[in-house]
Amino acid sequence: MKRFLLMLVFAVLLFAMRVFEVKASGLVVVLPNHTGWRDALGYYRVSGEVENIGNNAVKDAWITATFYDASGNTIGTAYEHAYLKVLLPGRKSPFEVLLTTAAASQVHHYSLSVVATDTDPIPEGLEILSSSSYIESISGNLIVSGNIKNVASETAHTVKVIAAFYNESGYVVATSCSYLGSQDLGPNET
Image (cartoon, rainbow, N blue to C red; front, top):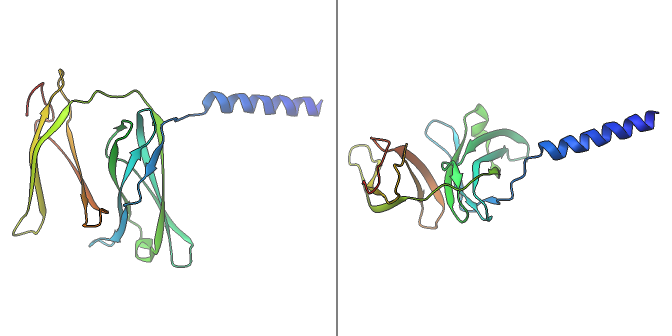
């Protein structure tokens, strides 16, 4: 009888694992061009990019950074999502993960992993017409400006502009995002 109950429990668990399993056939990877450093506030920042190398659109790409001291001991973990909510096949999205605890001063190295969930693709419809940048003389900040056009037939809502900044070797050294002032962009509007 015990054996029968044990087999029944095992079968129910197997069934539950199959029913509630989340499968993502899209494959998202962290690209090797990430960088990590301590910022002026003492936080440890990791900036980089993820890429969907699969055949399906994915959403909610979450990056996990595990931080280690010089002895290889885990001293912290931080999570953050990629800037793009939906990542179409072949597309990249920047990310930035922050370790804000006192352990940030002890970071010797880190490892990264990413998980995402399959989703329906979203329509493409925004085109960058131009961009330029300059260093602001007083603050020393890099200012980026440009023009975006909605080439789709429907209004684009809550338009988010995302940027990754690279050093001369192609490594991501900073990321940023901002929303359009009007947030919506009608068809053929810039």
